[in-house]
Image 1 (cartoon, helix red, strand yellow):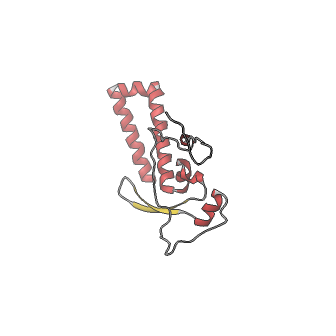
Image 2 (cartoon, rainbow, N blue to C red):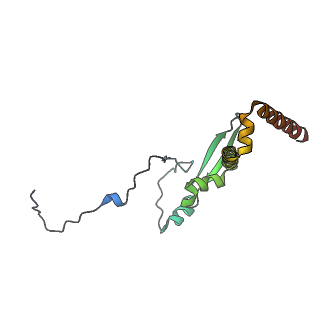
Image 3 (tube, rainbow, N blue to C red):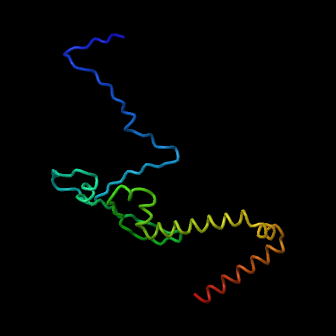
Length: 149
């Protein structure tokens, strides 16, 4: 390998891999336009010295359409005022729909944990007669709640 250089100067090797982190296999990268209107003419903005200044200047937001499991559609506007708004928690906190889904997910996880660890319930579900009695009890509770609501 010939290391002959011309015009003077010093070779500086850079390690670009430090700045670029590979996205993990269990992650999803979403790319989304965060402004609804294209500017008519390019505008030079100066004086933005921090990422907070950029967010304050551009005020990025996006309108998102959600559809529930029963087909009801809703629109929500997600606003981004700092980098924390881009994470799962930041997006869920802004959206009533996603917040409700997250609460529902947590409830299902608690039920699964209860089903896996409750020995009395496990034995009741294993016995066909006890299982039938439990189902009837739950159905009568549901009917009672629906009458009250």
